[in-house]
Image (cartoon, rainbow, N blue to C red; front, side, top):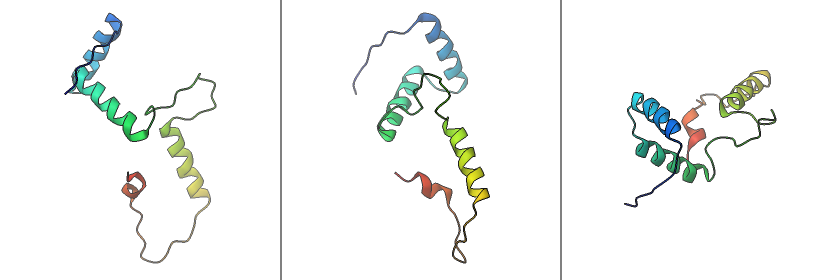
Length: 90
């Protein structure tokens, strides 16, 4: 297993470690989770913006999708059951 060394502001590290501790995570575990999400999404696992209001968070995008789907219903084959997990297959 590889070892990494990173530079981080002391106050930022302290605050992050407190929050991660409340979640039952170490900084190392959080960095590993982040790295796995980078690999899985093939990029940053969150929008990287200049806060100009032209991008949506995943949660906002999901809400918009649900609203659009409700306003434009489609007829599905009889007996069809939607499985939301199918949307997240890798």
